[in-house]
Image (cartoon, rainbow over all chains, first blue to last red; front, top):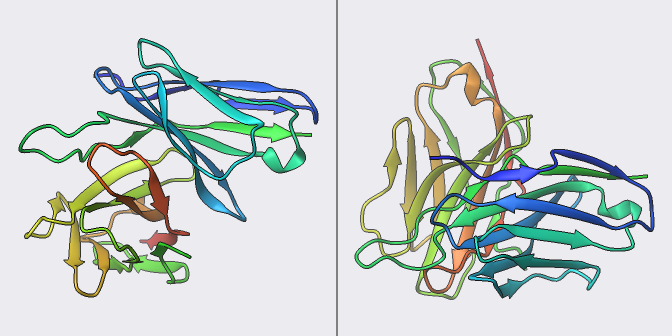
Length: 118
Length: 116
């Protein structure tokens, strides 16, 4: 089955602009989480969406937002870009719920979108 | 407070040898999950292995095994018979709370370089 697909792979934006990143999870997965990875801060959790509802949120400013569609595809938006937003943005796909007699062990990542803000 | 600690500096490993990557975690939850991921220079995060807090046996996936010591709060990854393609960053991560929650806390990672 197809893996997690993130588009675009690379982006260059100017300070003050906004950007939208997309993530298509594995078929059947209903949870999509977003992470920001920078050399200084490492991997940081942004938010998680499950069945079109935000279920968890990390400590990021309101400029970072997201949504999830009925087909589980998710988008992340960053408004008023700052230089510090330059990072690799990764999304993770999982079932999002516990299957009886089996733990939710799946959390698969896409290849990421590398955003550069100039 | 740091939830996942990976303190080893970059490691050089001889091909075909085993390597152990240390990971300690901090949680007050009874139910949690521990993950290891590999990130090559291309950037994608590759899922390697999972250990649930209630699992009594250590998880194994091919050449990867997880040495889970619950009382010590450690979840070390062992890679047996290292291959050149194992050169990458390795991240330990933890999911706290009920199953289904997909919020992971990551460590800073371990750099591994496999030399022929």
